[in-house]
Length: 497
Length: 132
Image 1: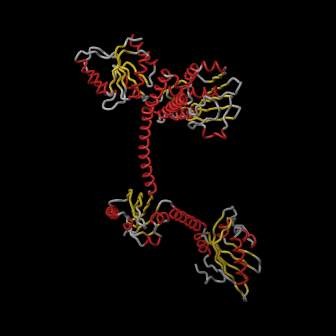
Image 2 (image 1 turned 90 degrees about the horizontal axis):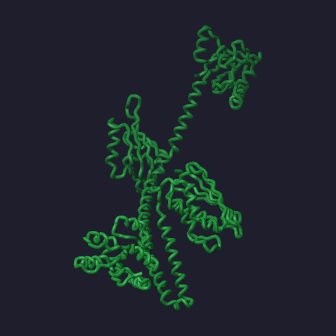
Image 3 (image 1 turned 90 degrees about the vertical axis):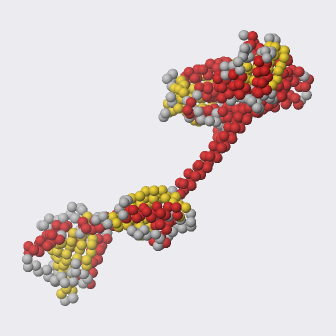
């Protein structure tokens, strides 16, 4: 709108036409008479401000309708310039209506000059709120889309109908190693893997012919430096409202690292399988050949002991005897360990916890009596766990025996056994008040092989290792809490039956 | 206690055979000991003896791991022979493989499984079992 030719006085011949124009276009007129210090607003101007038609405007109040900050500052400035420097103004600013709503308005003003002095300012006032808000929203949405496009971790692109790249995002550039400028000089098929070139051409032409609307496929591409890229392509043809093709839209998901990892895992798996079978072989060898030789040594020494007892009267032969015994024991331990390395999850049965404990306590009745052990059992008869009977016996036996073995010197052992449900497991707590273990020192070695923490003659160093392995083979886990000279608590979590 | 005339050892480990013979002697286990170093050797001889009505052993102590024909293969072939007299067979092995122990049940010819090392006590157990 060019207001250069706006008359000095607004003389309207047809009052009703004038009013119609104002209302239809949401344009109001206003006038500031400097000499009289009076302000006149047309009805539409009043409507835009949200004030009643009886409202009498004043300059100060008029300015205060403008939103604090940029809008108010600007209107004050341009009004001042208009009066002092005779400058026109045309600003898009925000006002706060009498109802408290913010509105975008266009404020236009020009000075009425008499004798080089401004005597009046007249102007127009237009409600442009809807248009402005829409424009702002659109701009924001466009910005969002652009940001999404740019920063998406998926490669995104647009191609023209000839298959040349028109727009590419950062991710795509990173994947292929080309800059944006380099991309725009290339055609889509330039990046195809040679084996997939023909297919790629067919896809694009089929989409243009209307035989295909979109296409998804794992694809191979060649990067700028000649490497193969494994990707997932999703491409579609975008048409206008009349159905004419506009351009192609493509998303290319770089799967190369995924692919490489999969290969790594496969290699690792096959290596592990080979190693596993080698270990099983070894276990078999231990299980048989070593045992045969140790058993021969045992027999020879026993025969010698009976036949020629004099042989044992020096220092060496008894030590050979002892060494053979220890060798035998080590092999036994290794056997125990070797047989529990495999998971037993398919062979689990339901076992009543209280019955299992009672059985074990009966087995240990002699030891319990001898050590004067006090056993407190708080297990509800309805608790059932999943496990293998032999393992459960072995586990319970080991922990209870340990609690008795590692009692405080000169004090009878006291053991508290409780069970409770924890999520879908049963937590069995075996708590003793014995010697305790310094977890700061032994911490994660606790369940290791051949690790002992006390100078007890019976400390084999393998019980906890075997028990932990057995617990884990039946899908459970074990935790420990301990303080030296206070006691130890083992918490065994097993699956609920 | 000597109620066993001939004991038959089928094993390839010479040290073990030496020890076992000695222990059998001190335990007064039997009169005669016959040794075969592998299953085939034993099978051929036993077959021959059966066919010619010769004297057969009163007990067989059979090892599992042997060359040429191992314990299980021996048993497979032995089961096929028509026998007038059934000889008690004890499998003696240093194997602790539970698969081996489970296989026992499929061989009714086998009386029991004994693990090495053998001592006097184990031999006496065999003797007393054979009385019954």
